[in-house]
Length: 577
Image 1 (cartoon, helix red, strand yellow):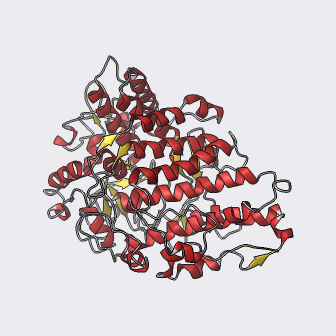
Image 2: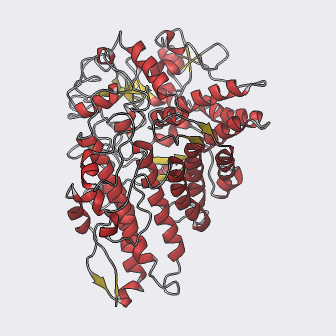
Image 3: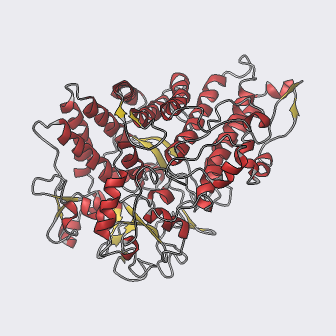
C-alpha cells in the first residue's frame, strides 16, 4: 500500500483561518491502494478538482479577476452606495487606512493558497502514478504546474513577499517552517517561471477541453512572468525599480514568438468587442489563449456561472434589482480615449478637459468599454443611460459611468439571478492582444534596432480597434460622436515608443485589472496615482485626503493572521505596516 497525504497542505497559511476544514471536505482522506493509484479516473478527479476551485473558491468580494483590487488604479473608482459600502475597498481606493487585519487583505491570500493546495494534492498523486497506465501523466502534471504558476503569479503581484508552495510532497509540519523571504524578488519570479517553463515543454499545441491550457498559453504566461521579473525590485527596503534586465526581456521576446501563437491558432479577434460577448459562438475565440470557463443550464443549478462580478451590475429598477454598481470607470479613463485630429492619443494633456461626445475625436474602444449617459447600456436601446440613481447608487459620488466588459445585455438571456447577479460569459485570463503588447514593450526596452517592429505590433492592436464598430455602427449618426483612430507612421525614439506602448496598454486592457500592476512594475504608481488624486479631488470629494505612499502602497501587507501564525518565519513588506 502507498500512503498519500490528502490533508490541507498549506497548514501555516490556513491554520489560523479554519480553511483546512474546507479543504479536507473537498478531497479524499487517508490511505489509498495501488489499484487506485493506477486508475486514471481517480487521478483525473483530483485534477478536475484543481480546475474547479478556480470557479468555486472565488467570490464577489474576492474575484480572481482582481477587479476588487484594481480600484487602486486610475482606471476606476470603488463605486457602490458610498464610502462605507465596502469600506475596506474604499481604503484601497484612496490608499489610506489599509489595515493588516482587514478581511479583504487576508481573504484573497487564503483563497489563492486554497487553489494552490488543490493543485499540490493532484500533483502528489500524479507523481506516484504509473506512466504505463496513465499516458497523459506528463501533460496533466504540466497542467497542474500551470495552475500553480497562475496562483503564485496572482499572489506575487498582490503581496510581493509570498510563500512558495512549490513542493507537493511537503508534510503539513514542514509547511510550518517555510519563509516568505526564502527567495529574493527576482528569484521568486523565477520560481513561477519554472512552473510555466515545465508547462510549456509538456503541453500540446491544442486541447480538446477548452479550459485546459495549451503550449501557447504557457508561453504567454512565461512572457508575462519574465516581463514582471525584468523590472527588478530587489532592494528589501523599498519597491523601487533598480534596473531592467535585458536577459529577461529577451525571454519575453522568445515566448511571444508569433510562430508559437500561430501554431495554436491564436490571433486577434476581427472585432475587439467579440472578446466580451457571452454568446457561445464568441467564447474561446482566436484571441482567448486561456479563459475561465463559466456556464449555465448545465445541471448544476447555474452553479458554474461567474458570480464574482455580482457587485458590478448596475441597479436598473425592475430589471437588475439588487445590482450593486461597484467598479465605476473613472473620468480620467474616459478622457484617455480622446484622440487628436491625426487619430492618435493626446498623451500629455488628455485629462485637461472632460470628453465631449459632440466635439471631441475618440477611440471607438471607449464605447465598447464604458457605458455613459446618453448612450445605450450594453448596446440595448431599451436602456439609455442618464444621470440618475439607476446608474449611480451613490447619487453621483462615483459618477454615472458603468463598465461594459464585465456586464451583459439584461434582455439577452445571459444574466442570471441568484444570491447575486451572474453570467455564463467566460473571463479571458490571457488574450492575444496582451501578447502583442508584451512583445512590443520588450522590444522597445531592449532598444536593439527593432523599434519599428514594436510600433508595428502596437499598430496591429490599433488597426483592429479602428474596425471594431459593428455594435456601434450608428453612433456617429445617431449620437453625434466622432471616431478617429489611426496607426502610427514614421520613425520614433525609444522614449516616444514607450509612451505609445504604455498608453496602448491602458486603453486596450482598460478595466481588465492590469493597470495598477503595470504602474507598479514600471515604478510609476506613486507619481501617476498622486497626480490622479489631485486632479480628481475637485470633482470627487473622496480623493481630497487620498495619498499614495511610495515604497508602501505598491503591495498589500502580509495579512496579520498569517504573520501571527508563522512562528516568526514571515517578514512584513516594507512601508511601516
